[in-house]
Length: 515
Image (cartoon, rainbow, N blue to C red; front, side, top):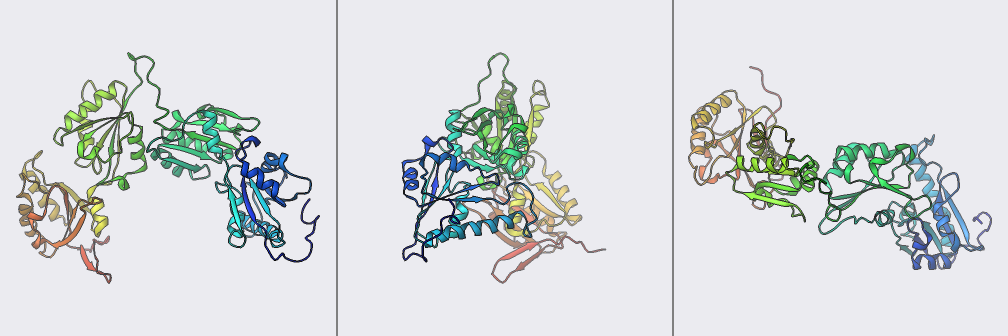
Protein backbone atom coordinates (compact mmCIF):
# COMPACT_ATOMS: atom_id res chain seq x y z
CA UNK A 1 0.00 0.00 0.00
CA UNK A 2 1.16 3.58 -0.63
CA UNK A 3 1.51 6.38 1.87
CA UNK A 4 -1.72 7.83 0.55
CA UNK A 5 -3.43 4.62 1.70
CA UNK A 6 -1.65 4.31 5.03
CA UNK A 7 -1.27 7.77 6.54
CA UNK A 8 1.36 8.57 9.07
CA UNK A 9 0.19 8.51 12.68
CA UNK A 10 0.79 11.84 14.36
CA UNK A 11 3.59 14.32 13.63
CA UNK A 12 7.30 13.83 12.99
CA UNK A 13 9.12 11.33 15.18
CA UNK A 14 11.70 12.50 17.70
CA UNK A 15 14.13 9.95 16.12
CA UNK A 16 14.19 10.06 12.34
CA UNK A 17 14.11 6.84 10.41
CA UNK A 18 17.08 5.29 8.66
CA UNK A 19 17.57 5.33 4.91
CA UNK A 20 18.99 2.30 3.12
CA UNK A 21 20.12 2.02 -0.48
CA UNK A 22 19.87 -1.70 -1.14
CA UNK A 23 21.63 -3.37 -4.07
CA UNK A 24 19.79 -6.46 -5.27
CA UNK A 25 22.35 -7.77 -7.74
CA UNK A 26 21.90 -8.36 -11.47
CA UNK A 27 18.54 -10.14 -11.44
CA UNK A 28 18.70 -13.62 -9.96
CA UNK A 29 17.21 -13.32 -6.45
CA UNK A 30 19.71 -15.87 -5.18
CA UNK A 31 22.49 -13.34 -5.88
CA UNK A 32 21.12 -10.90 -3.30
CA UNK A 33 23.46 -10.51 -0.34
CA UNK A 34 22.49 -11.72 3.13
CA UNK A 35 22.68 -8.12 4.32
CA UNK A 36 20.27 -6.96 1.60
CA UNK A 37 17.73 -9.60 2.60
CA UNK A 38 17.98 -8.62 6.29
CA UNK A 39 17.57 -4.91 5.62
CA UNK A 40 14.48 -5.53 3.49
CA UNK A 41 13.04 -7.76 6.22
CA UNK A 42 13.56 -5.07 8.87
CA UNK A 43 12.40 -2.10 6.80
CA UNK A 44 9.06 -0.38 7.25
CA UNK A 45 8.98 1.12 3.74
CA UNK A 46 10.14 -0.43 0.47
CA UNK A 47 10.67 2.05 -2.36
CA UNK A 48 11.50 1.20 -5.95
CA UNK A 49 11.67 2.97 -9.29
CA UNK A 50 9.80 1.99 -12.43
CA UNK A 51 8.79 3.33 -15.82
CA UNK A 52 5.21 4.43 -16.42
CA UNK A 53 4.12 0.87 -17.18
CA UNK A 54 4.53 0.28 -13.42
CA UNK A 55 6.56 -2.93 -13.67
CA UNK A 56 9.63 -2.69 -11.45
CA UNK A 57 12.54 -5.06 -12.04
CA UNK A 58 13.86 -4.25 -8.57
CA UNK A 59 10.54 -5.23 -6.97
CA UNK A 60 10.39 -8.47 -8.95
CA UNK A 61 13.87 -9.44 -7.71
CA UNK A 62 12.97 -8.78 -4.07
CA UNK A 63 9.35 -9.98 -4.29
CA UNK A 64 9.74 -13.10 -2.14
CA UNK A 65 11.10 -10.97 0.72
CA UNK A 66 8.25 -8.42 0.77
CA UNK A 67 5.65 -8.64 3.52
CA UNK A 68 1.97 -7.73 3.30
CA UNK A 69 2.51 -5.03 5.93
CA UNK A 70 5.36 -3.36 4.06
CA UNK A 71 4.52 0.15 2.95
CA UNK A 72 5.42 0.28 -0.72
CA UNK A 73 6.41 3.45 -2.52
CA UNK A 74 6.44 3.09 -6.29
CA UNK A 75 8.57 5.90 -7.70
CA UNK A 76 7.30 6.09 -11.28
CA UNK A 77 9.40 8.03 -13.77
CA UNK A 78 7.39 10.62 -15.73
CA UNK A 79 9.61 10.00 -18.78
CA UNK A 80 12.28 7.49 -19.74
CA UNK A 81 13.44 7.90 -23.34
CA UNK A 82 10.43 9.70 -24.82
CA UNK A 83 10.10 13.46 -25.28
CA UNK A 84 8.46 15.75 -22.72
CA UNK A 85 6.71 19.12 -22.74
CA UNK A 86 8.19 20.02 -19.34
CA UNK A 87 9.48 23.63 -19.47
CA UNK A 88 12.87 22.41 -18.28
CA UNK A 89 13.03 19.67 -20.90
CA UNK A 90 13.96 16.07 -20.17
CA UNK A 91 16.46 16.98 -17.44
CA UNK A 92 14.01 19.39 -15.83
CA UNK A 93 11.28 16.74 -15.74
CA UNK A 94 13.58 14.23 -14.07
CA UNK A 95 14.94 16.73 -11.54
CA UNK A 96 11.42 17.64 -10.53
CA UNK A 97 10.52 13.96 -10.21
CA UNK A 98 13.56 13.25 -8.02
CA UNK A 99 12.69 16.15 -5.73
CA UNK A 100 9.11 14.94 -5.36
CA UNK A 101 10.22 11.32 -4.78
CA UNK A 102 12.73 12.40 -2.13
CA UNK A 103 10.02 14.46 -0.42
CA UNK A 104 7.74 11.41 -0.31
CA UNK A 105 10.46 9.32 1.33
CA UNK A 106 11.31 12.14 3.74
CA UNK A 107 7.75 11.96 5.13
CA UNK A 108 8.41 8.37 6.21
CA UNK A 109 11.88 9.14 7.56
CA UNK A 110 10.55 12.09 9.58
CA UNK A 111 7.94 9.75 11.05
CA UNK A 112 10.72 7.42 12.26
CA UNK A 113 10.23 4.72 9.65
CA UNK A 114 13.08 2.77 8.09
CA UNK A 115 13.09 3.21 4.32
CA UNK A 116 14.81 0.76 1.97
CA UNK A 117 15.20 1.98 -1.61
CA UNK A 118 15.85 -1.19 -3.58
CA UNK A 119 17.88 -1.08 -6.76
CA UNK A 120 18.99 -3.74 -9.23
CA UNK A 121 22.74 -4.14 -9.44
CA UNK A 122 24.64 -1.84 -7.11
CA UNK A 123 22.86 1.28 -5.77
CA UNK A 124 25.75 3.63 -6.58
CA UNK A 125 26.66 2.12 -9.96
CA UNK A 126 24.38 3.83 -12.50
CA UNK A 127 21.59 3.12 -9.99
CA UNK A 128 18.39 5.11 -9.57
CA UNK A 129 18.93 5.15 -5.81
CA UNK A 130 21.81 7.63 -6.10
CA UNK A 131 19.36 10.45 -6.85
CA UNK A 132 17.64 9.81 -3.54
CA UNK A 133 20.99 9.52 -1.80
CA UNK A 134 22.12 12.94 -2.98
CA UNK A 135 18.93 14.53 -1.69
CA UNK A 136 18.49 12.67 1.62
CA UNK A 137 21.76 11.17 2.91
CA UNK A 138 22.93 14.45 4.47
CA UNK A 139 19.65 14.73 6.42
CA UNK A 140 19.11 11.20 7.73
CA UNK A 141 21.19 8.25 8.97
CA UNK A 142 22.03 6.32 5.81
CA UNK A 143 23.64 3.05 4.81
CA UNK A 144 24.28 1.70 1.34
CA UNK A 145 24.22 -2.08 0.80
CA UNK A 146 26.39 -2.93 -2.21
CA UNK A 147 25.19 -5.41 -4.79
CA UNK A 148 26.65 -7.52 -7.58
CA UNK A 149 26.85 -5.33 -10.69
CA UNK A 150 25.56 -6.32 -14.10
CA UNK A 151 29.09 -6.13 -15.53
CA UNK A 152 30.31 -8.62 -12.92
CA UNK A 153 27.43 -10.92 -13.80
CA UNK A 154 28.18 -10.52 -17.51
CA UNK A 155 31.84 -11.47 -17.04
CA UNK A 156 30.79 -14.49 -14.97
CA UNK A 157 28.33 -15.63 -17.61
CA UNK A 158 30.93 -15.23 -20.36
CA UNK A 159 33.57 -16.95 -18.24
CA UNK A 160 36.07 -14.28 -19.28
CA UNK A 161 38.12 -12.19 -16.82
CA UNK A 162 37.57 -8.46 -17.17
CA UNK A 163 41.07 -7.33 -16.20
CA UNK A 164 44.33 -8.85 -15.05
CA UNK A 165 47.65 -7.55 -13.66
CA UNK A 166 48.06 -3.85 -14.57
CA UNK A 167 45.30 -3.74 -17.17
CA UNK A 168 42.89 -0.81 -17.11
CA UNK A 169 39.16 -1.53 -17.19
CA UNK A 170 37.02 1.30 -18.56
CA UNK A 171 33.27 1.46 -17.93
CA UNK A 172 31.37 3.45 -20.54
CA UNK A 173 27.72 4.45 -20.95
CA UNK A 174 26.52 3.74 -24.46
CA UNK A 175 24.90 7.18 -24.45
CA UNK A 176 28.30 8.85 -24.97
CA UNK A 177 28.90 10.44 -28.38
CA UNK A 178 30.18 7.90 -30.88
CA UNK A 179 33.54 9.66 -31.32
CA UNK A 180 34.11 9.62 -27.56
CA UNK A 181 33.20 5.95 -27.34
CA UNK A 182 35.61 5.17 -30.17
CA UNK A 183 38.49 7.04 -28.54
CA UNK A 184 37.95 5.44 -25.16
CA UNK A 185 37.60 1.93 -26.55
CA UNK A 186 40.79 2.39 -28.57
CA UNK A 187 42.81 3.55 -25.58
CA UNK A 188 41.82 1.06 -22.89
CA UNK A 189 42.83 -2.54 -22.18
CA UNK A 190 39.35 -3.81 -21.34
CA UNK A 191 35.92 -2.22 -21.38
CA UNK A 192 32.28 -2.65 -20.47
CA UNK A 193 29.67 -0.57 -22.31
CA UNK A 194 26.43 -0.16 -20.39
CA UNK A 195 23.01 1.13 -21.45
CA UNK A 196 22.72 -0.41 -24.88
CA UNK A 197 19.20 -0.63 -26.33
CA UNK A 198 18.78 2.16 -28.84
CA UNK A 199 22.45 3.15 -28.48
CA UNK A 200 23.60 -0.20 -29.89
CA UNK A 201 24.19 0.92 -33.52
CA UNK A 202 26.57 3.69 -32.36
CA UNK A 203 28.30 1.32 -29.92
CA UNK A 204 28.76 -1.23 -32.70
CA UNK A 205 30.29 1.37 -35.02
CA UNK A 206 32.60 2.54 -32.21
CA UNK A 207 33.75 -1.05 -31.67
CA UNK A 208 34.51 -1.41 -35.37
CA UNK A 209 36.29 1.93 -35.71
CA UNK A 210 38.41 1.31 -32.61
CA UNK A 211 39.43 -2.15 -33.81
CA UNK A 212 37.85 -3.88 -30.80
CA UNK A 213 35.05 -5.75 -32.58
CA UNK A 214 36.92 -9.09 -32.83
CA UNK A 215 37.21 -9.15 -29.03
CA UNK A 216 33.77 -7.76 -28.20
CA UNK A 217 31.16 -9.93 -26.46
CA UNK A 218 27.47 -9.34 -25.82
CA UNK A 219 25.46 -10.21 -22.71
CA UNK A 220 21.73 -9.61 -22.38
CA UNK A 221 19.79 -9.85 -19.10
CA UNK A 222 22.61 -11.59 -17.25
CA UNK A 223 21.23 -14.06 -14.64
CA UNK A 224 17.63 -13.15 -15.58
CA UNK A 225 15.06 -15.05 -17.59
CA UNK A 226 15.81 -14.58 -21.28
CA UNK A 227 19.56 -14.33 -20.76
CA UNK A 228 21.58 -14.33 -23.99
CA UNK A 229 25.32 -14.23 -24.74
CA UNK A 230 27.09 -14.07 -28.09
CA UNK A 231 29.78 -12.29 -30.05
CA UNK A 232 28.83 -8.64 -30.44
CA UNK A 233 29.32 -8.87 -34.19
CA UNK A 234 26.54 -11.46 -34.42
CA UNK A 235 23.87 -9.34 -32.71
CA UNK A 236 20.98 -7.76 -34.61
CA UNK A 237 20.53 -4.15 -33.46
CA UNK A 238 16.71 -4.44 -33.49
CA UNK A 239 16.84 -7.14 -30.80
CA UNK A 240 18.92 -5.32 -28.17
CA UNK A 241 17.19 -4.26 -24.92
CA UNK A 242 18.38 -1.63 -22.46
CA UNK A 243 19.48 -4.34 -20.01
CA UNK A 244 22.37 -5.53 -22.14
CA UNK A 245 26.09 -4.82 -22.00
CA UNK A 246 29.01 -5.05 -24.40
CA UNK A 247 32.20 -6.52 -22.94
CA UNK A 248 35.75 -6.21 -24.25
CA UNK A 249 37.49 -8.59 -21.85
CA UNK A 250 41.08 -8.76 -20.62
CA UNK A 251 43.67 -9.06 -23.38
CA UNK A 252 46.03 -10.92 -21.06
CA UNK A 253 43.50 -13.51 -19.91
CA UNK A 254 41.81 -13.75 -23.31
CA UNK A 255 44.57 -13.50 -25.94
CA UNK A 256 43.72 -13.40 -29.62
CA UNK A 257 43.72 -16.93 -31.07
CA UNK A 258 46.77 -17.97 -33.06
CA UNK A 259 46.35 -18.59 -36.76
CA UNK A 260 45.07 -22.11 -37.40
CA UNK A 261 47.55 -22.74 -40.21
CA UNK A 262 51.11 -21.58 -39.53
CA UNK A 263 51.85 -21.79 -43.24
CA UNK A 264 49.07 -19.33 -43.99
CA UNK A 265 49.13 -16.90 -41.06
CA UNK A 266 46.64 -14.13 -40.48
CA UNK A 267 47.71 -10.89 -42.17
CA UNK A 268 49.89 -8.75 -39.96
CA UNK A 269 50.51 -5.03 -40.06
CA UNK A 270 52.93 -2.37 -38.95
CA UNK A 271 51.65 0.65 -37.03
CA UNK A 272 54.15 3.47 -36.52
CA UNK A 273 53.21 5.11 -33.23
CA UNK A 274 54.24 8.53 -31.96
CA UNK A 275 54.57 8.58 -28.17
CA UNK A 276 54.90 12.34 -27.89
CA UNK A 277 57.86 14.10 -26.27
CA UNK A 278 57.72 12.23 -22.95
CA UNK A 279 55.45 9.92 -20.95
CA UNK A 280 51.90 8.58 -21.17
CA UNK A 281 50.20 11.96 -20.65
CA UNK A 282 51.27 12.86 -24.20
CA UNK A 283 49.86 9.72 -25.86
CA UNK A 284 46.74 9.97 -27.97
CA UNK A 285 43.98 7.41 -27.29
CA UNK A 286 44.51 5.88 -30.73
CA UNK A 287 48.24 5.44 -30.11
CA UNK A 288 47.64 4.00 -26.66
CA UNK A 289 45.27 1.45 -28.16
CA UNK A 290 47.69 0.48 -30.93
CA UNK A 291 50.49 -0.09 -28.42
CA UNK A 292 48.21 -2.27 -26.30
CA UNK A 293 47.02 -4.31 -29.28
CA UNK A 294 50.47 -5.00 -30.72
CA UNK A 295 52.07 -8.41 -30.38
CA UNK A 296 55.54 -6.97 -31.02
CA UNK A 297 57.05 -3.59 -30.15
CA UNK A 298 60.04 -2.39 -32.15
CA UNK A 299 61.98 0.75 -31.35
CA UNK A 300 64.84 2.69 -29.85
CA UNK A 301 65.21 1.35 -26.32
CA UNK A 302 64.72 4.78 -24.70
CA UNK A 303 61.32 5.10 -26.39
CA UNK A 304 60.33 1.48 -25.69
CA UNK A 305 60.92 2.14 -22.00
CA UNK A 306 58.01 4.62 -22.09
CA UNK A 307 55.59 1.84 -23.00
CA UNK A 308 54.23 -0.33 -20.14
CA UNK A 309 55.34 -3.96 -20.20
CA UNK A 310 52.48 -6.29 -21.11
CA UNK A 311 52.52 -10.07 -20.65
CA UNK A 312 52.85 -11.89 -23.95
CA UNK A 313 54.12 -8.84 -25.84
CA UNK A 314 57.57 -9.10 -27.41
CA UNK A 315 59.91 -6.10 -27.26
CA UNK A 316 62.70 -5.54 -29.78
CA UNK A 317 64.92 -2.69 -28.59
CA UNK A 318 67.91 -1.29 -30.42
CA UNK A 319 70.29 1.64 -30.70
CA UNK A 320 69.11 4.99 -32.04
CA UNK A 321 71.16 4.80 -35.24
CA UNK A 322 69.71 1.72 -36.94
CA UNK A 323 66.41 3.05 -38.28
CA UNK A 324 66.44 0.97 -41.47
CA UNK A 325 67.25 -2.22 -39.59
CA UNK A 326 64.38 -1.57 -37.16
CA UNK A 327 62.01 -0.94 -40.05
CA UNK A 328 63.04 -4.15 -41.81
CA UNK A 329 62.61 -6.16 -38.60
CA UNK A 330 59.10 -4.76 -38.07
CA UNK A 331 58.07 -5.47 -41.66
CA UNK A 332 59.48 -9.01 -41.51
CA UNK A 333 57.46 -9.70 -38.37
CA UNK A 334 54.30 -8.30 -39.94
CA UNK A 335 54.87 -10.36 -43.09
CA UNK A 336 54.76 -13.43 -40.85
CA UNK A 337 51.36 -12.38 -39.50
CA UNK A 338 52.39 -10.38 -36.41
CA UNK A 339 50.75 -7.14 -35.30
CA UNK A 340 53.74 -4.80 -34.87
CA UNK A 341 54.00 -1.33 -33.39
CA UNK A 342 57.10 0.67 -34.25
CA UNK A 343 57.59 3.04 -31.32
CA UNK A 344 58.79 6.53 -32.16
CA UNK A 345 59.27 9.62 -30.05
CA UNK A 346 57.27 12.76 -30.75
CA UNK A 347 55.42 12.56 -34.05
CA UNK A 348 56.70 9.64 -36.15
CA UNK A 349 56.45 11.66 -39.35
CA UNK A 350 58.72 14.50 -38.20
CA UNK A 351 62.41 13.51 -38.29
CA UNK A 352 61.39 10.11 -36.94
CA UNK A 353 60.56 6.49 -37.79
CA UNK A 354 57.64 6.81 -40.22
CA UNK A 355 59.93 7.76 -43.11
CA UNK A 356 62.31 4.89 -42.39
CA UNK A 357 59.48 2.36 -42.28
CA UNK A 358 57.80 3.61 -45.45
CA UNK A 359 61.12 3.73 -47.28
CA UNK A 360 61.74 0.04 -46.58
CA UNK A 361 58.04 -0.83 -47.09
CA UNK A 362 58.25 0.59 -50.63
CA UNK A 363 60.76 -2.07 -51.58
CA UNK A 364 60.32 -5.72 -52.42
CA UNK A 365 59.39 -7.94 -50.62
CA UNK A 366 57.44 -5.61 -48.29
CA UNK A 367 55.11 -3.76 -50.66
CA UNK A 368 52.08 -5.81 -49.59
CA UNK A 369 52.58 -5.35 -45.83
CA UNK A 370 49.98 -2.92 -44.42
CA UNK A 371 51.55 0.15 -42.79
CA UNK A 372 49.74 2.80 -40.76
CA UNK A 373 51.19 5.95 -39.22
CA UNK A 374 49.60 7.39 -36.08
CA UNK A 375 50.39 11.00 -35.19
CA UNK A 376 51.92 12.12 -31.93
CA UNK A 377 52.58 15.40 -30.16
CA UNK A 378 55.85 16.67 -31.61
CA UNK A 379 58.55 18.48 -29.64
CA UNK A 380 57.90 21.81 -31.39
CA UNK A 381 54.23 21.85 -30.38
CA UNK A 382 55.02 20.71 -26.84
CA UNK A 383 57.68 23.38 -26.29
CA UNK A 384 55.51 26.06 -27.91
CA UNK A 385 52.62 25.24 -25.59
CA UNK A 386 54.86 25.52 -22.54
CA UNK A 387 56.18 28.90 -23.73
CA UNK A 388 52.86 30.32 -24.88
CA UNK A 389 52.17 30.51 -28.61
CA UNK A 390 55.38 31.27 -30.52
CA UNK A 391 54.13 29.16 -33.46
CA UNK A 392 50.95 31.24 -33.76
CA UNK A 393 51.82 32.28 -37.33
CA UNK A 394 53.72 30.71 -40.23
CA UNK A 395 56.80 28.76 -39.24
CA UNK A 396 59.43 26.45 -40.67
CA UNK A 397 60.70 23.19 -39.16
CA UNK A 398 64.39 22.46 -39.79
CA UNK A 399 66.79 19.87 -38.40
CA UNK A 400 70.28 21.15 -37.64
CA UNK A 401 71.76 17.66 -37.79
CA UNK A 402 74.25 17.24 -40.61
CA UNK A 403 74.30 13.46 -40.25
CA UNK A 404 71.87 12.93 -43.15
CA UNK A 405 72.37 16.17 -45.12
CA UNK A 406 75.34 18.54 -45.54
CA UNK A 407 75.61 21.74 -43.52
CA UNK A 408 75.53 23.80 -46.73
CA UNK A 409 71.96 22.63 -47.35
CA UNK A 410 70.99 23.46 -43.75
CA UNK A 411 72.50 26.96 -44.03
CA UNK A 412 70.72 27.61 -47.31
CA UNK A 413 67.36 26.62 -45.80
CA UNK A 414 67.99 28.75 -42.72
CA UNK A 415 68.69 31.77 -44.93
CA UNK A 416 65.54 31.18 -46.97
CA UNK A 417 63.34 30.79 -43.88
CA UNK A 418 64.75 33.80 -42.07
CA UNK A 419 64.47 35.93 -45.23
CA UNK A 420 60.77 34.99 -45.36
CA UNK A 421 60.46 36.13 -41.70
CA UNK A 422 59.25 32.75 -40.53
CA UNK A 423 59.41 31.53 -36.95
CA UNK A 424 61.89 28.65 -36.81
CA UNK A 425 61.47 25.35 -34.99
CA UNK A 426 64.97 23.85 -34.89
CA UNK A 427 65.33 20.12 -34.15
CA UNK A 428 68.51 18.19 -33.34
CA UNK A 429 70.48 21.35 -32.55
CA UNK A 430 73.48 19.71 -30.96
CA UNK A 431 75.01 16.65 -29.35
CA UNK A 432 78.27 15.51 -27.80
CA UNK A 433 79.70 15.01 -31.28
CA UNK A 434 78.10 18.13 -32.81
CA UNK A 435 78.77 21.30 -30.87
CA UNK A 436 79.31 23.99 -33.49
CA UNK A 437 76.00 24.13 -35.42
CA UNK A 438 74.15 26.27 -32.88
CA UNK A 439 76.85 28.92 -32.94
CA UNK A 440 76.91 28.98 -36.74
CA UNK A 441 73.11 29.17 -36.83
CA UNK A 442 73.10 32.11 -34.40
CA UNK A 443 75.66 34.00 -36.52
CA UNK A 444 73.64 33.39 -39.66
CA UNK A 445 70.36 34.50 -38.11
CA UNK A 446 71.83 37.65 -36.59
CA UNK A 447 72.59 38.81 -40.13
CA UNK A 448 68.83 39.09 -40.68
CA UNK A 449 67.14 39.18 -37.25
CA UNK A 450 67.24 41.73 -34.44
CA UNK A 451 69.52 40.82 -31.52
CA UNK A 452 66.58 40.85 -29.09
CA UNK A 453 64.56 38.29 -31.10
CA UNK A 454 63.06 35.83 -28.56
CA UNK A 455 64.45 32.30 -28.61
CA UNK A 456 62.70 29.56 -26.61
CA UNK A 457 64.89 26.72 -25.34
CA UNK A 458 62.68 23.76 -24.46
CA UNK A 459 64.49 20.83 -22.89
CA UNK A 460 63.04 17.43 -21.90
CA UNK A 461 59.49 18.73 -22.30
CA UNK A 462 57.13 16.56 -20.27
CA UNK A 463 60.03 14.74 -18.64
CA UNK A 464 61.54 14.91 -15.15
CA UNK A 465 64.21 17.43 -16.19
CA UNK A 466 61.90 19.75 -18.11
CA UNK A 467 63.04 23.33 -18.47
CA UNK A 468 61.73 26.16 -20.64
CA UNK A 469 63.74 29.36 -20.96
CA UNK A 470 63.49 32.37 -23.23
CA UNK A 471 66.65 34.28 -24.17
CA UNK A 472 67.53 36.94 -26.71
CA UNK A 473 69.04 35.66 -29.94
CA UNK A 474 72.27 37.53 -29.24
CA UNK A 475 72.52 35.83 -25.82
CA UNK A 476 71.95 32.27 -27.05
CA UNK A 477 74.73 30.12 -25.54
CA UNK A 478 75.52 27.00 -27.63
CA UNK A 479 76.87 25.20 -24.56
CA UNK A 480 73.34 25.25 -23.06
CA UNK A 481 71.91 23.26 -25.98
CA UNK A 482 71.92 19.47 -26.44
CA UNK A 483 69.98 16.79 -28.33
CA UNK A 484 67.15 16.93 -25.79
CA UNK A 485 66.63 20.62 -26.52
CA UNK A 486 64.48 22.18 -29.21
CA UNK A 487 64.88 25.83 -30.24
CA UNK A 488 62.01 28.10 -31.28
CA UNK A 489 63.35 31.27 -32.84
CA UNK A 490 60.85 34.10 -33.19
CA UNK A 491 60.08 36.15 -36.29
CA UNK A 492 60.22 39.95 -36.41
CA UNK A 493 56.69 39.95 -34.96
CA UNK A 494 57.18 37.52 -32.06
CA UNK A 495 56.72 39.03 -28.62
CA UNK A 496 57.95 38.01 -25.16
CA UNK A 497 55.73 39.59 -22.50
CA UNK A 498 56.24 39.50 -18.73
CA UNK A 499 52.87 38.89 -17.03
CA UNK A 500 51.70 39.99 -13.58
CA UNK A 501 52.30 36.54 -12.07
CA UNK A 502 55.99 36.73 -13.00
CA UNK A 503 55.80 34.30 -15.92
CA UNK A 504 56.83 35.19 -19.45
CA UNK A 505 54.57 34.43 -22.40
CA UNK A 506 56.03 34.21 -25.90
CA UNK A 507 53.60 34.60 -28.77
CA UNK A 508 53.52 35.43 -32.47
CA UNK A 509 50.51 37.46 -33.66
CA UNK A 510 48.21 35.79 -36.15
CA UNK A 511 47.90 39.00 -38.17
CA UNK A 512 50.96 40.03 -40.17
CA UNK A 513 51.42 43.76 -40.90
CA UNK A 514 50.91 44.90 -44.46
CA UNK A 515 54.01 46.00 -46.36
